[in-house]
Length: 300
Image 1 (cartoon, rainbow, N blue to C red):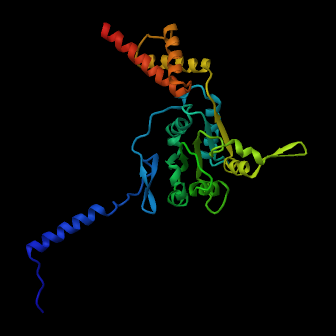
Image 2: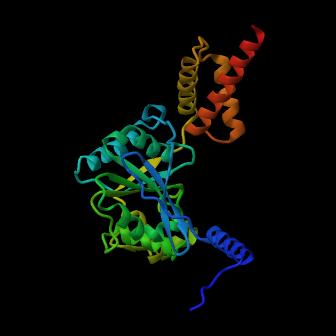
Image 3: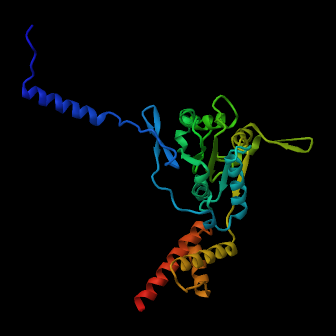
């Protein structure tokens, strides 16, 4: 039987074809070592997805979150119960932007990763993949928070239905080593309109919501904890700004301190931003301390 041989041109052509095919094929997904990895993102690929490890976690500490002591206490206590294997609740952190909702979750991971806490961030549109995500981690000896940030829905979205099922204890309910933490600017995760109240009725002097409102409440009501983050008053904003100024000065070894000049600058900063949140207070402190210390160094 004659042997088959390939000339050099054909070998080179096959090599180019194989190289092209390799470039379009998805890269193999490495298995995550959760002893080293503390956080991951769910990445969509095709009809499914995979967990992509986050190499570095933002070094945000619980003590860095100022002006939200009660919210911190409640969420931290719930998380500690979870880590101890005790009953704990899925949690909705809702309220004004910039008040520390997502920063609180990151700070919890920074504080409690040594005790076995892990966080998986899932975009709102990827919540439909909750069953697949849970399958990957349900046998791991760690405690996972599935975290979805800045969530809002339109009624009927597939991810809305999946989250509702997961929170409701259905067949998609997460195992005992998983909790769901969600942040939103909306208390009920859905837009609210004046027309929603038209279906309300007065029965025996009690207000009964119409079907539209009941549907909107039905999702948020499935979270065991609602934690509200509310706008700061100007006095609260100034107090947080003061604390940040003093912390940043201390970290930079400066004797610069909060004074009337800083106070007036903070008031103007808040007015220009149209916001008195903790995020704006930190941004002010970064700008004021940084620019003041730079000028002092330049003048020396």
